[in-house]
Length: 114
Ligand SMILES: [Zn+2]
Image (cartoon, rainbow, N blue to C red; front, top):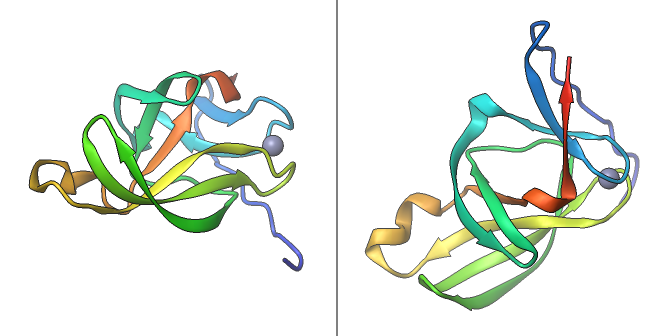
């Protein structure tokens, strides 16, 4: 995989960053949050427009409650934990807004206050 250059969010004091529960690597901020109304493998999950410090796994088709999707698991760049997935293709017209977006599992996140 080579060397991974970790990125960091520079946010104002009082703002919150969502980080890896296991290793505290930065993943996202609430500015990037699209929806909290998602369900992951471990319960609640959040949809983000973008996340940082992750790498993607193999491409696969997954049948979900909202239809068939082509997805890739996303791994923490630091500790390799699978923390969610990325939507590549949504086959239902109504689900197209998820394409290119990221799911993070709530239970695998830690909220860090700056
Ligand atoms: Zn991690």
